[in-house]
Image 1 (cartoon, rainbow, N blue to C red):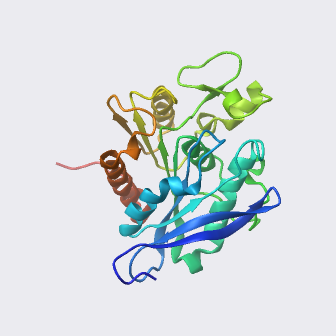
Image 2 (spheres, one colour):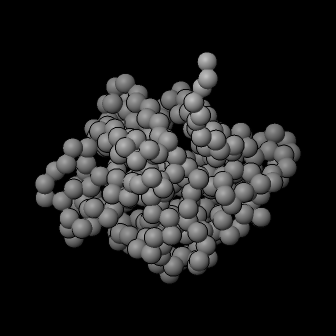
Length: 275
């Protein structure tokens, strides 16, 4: 417990296993007494082939200051382990959070997931495939649900294509060296959109040349069509990873907090206003 007004950071906590080794996370605990708090799993980016859990440390601190227990988890990268090891490890982190809700001081029904870039792809895919056998893996805590209360994707790849390019998509070769149309469809968060998808926040820069801005626009349109509560925030002329600039990072965190407060901390759906 942090009683000095600061977020406490516990580094290197083992949350599961994958590929014969331990998987670790950093846990950000808010100041003061923490009980039945909302929580966020933070998933880093790096093209599925690089990056580490320290990348989202800033969000862990900023969200932690507002009462959210944050868990920044690692996942096996390519080529250490091929797809779908990455989503298996994200799901293992979600199961660990729910199974250890008492120890973490969190409400198991108020776990959200946030990711940037490749991590955003994994976050949205996890959100759309709760308890899906193809993506669960065996990283620990079997039988515990991987459902999330809300999802946040920051410049997220949402659609993969094979052989014939798709608007807003990225080639499945970025994820797997033996591509197929079936693999591309299964790995695309857009494929798994339904009315059961959790409330979602999408953030993207219009100057992104790594992940097309249309990736978020198209995901937004699919979620709207499915009547899922969804917000899309586009930042004019900003490139990929623009939130690494402190001013943008703080603004993105503020948008996340408003969204999470509405749909996770005190979930409520909009009702018609009577004037």
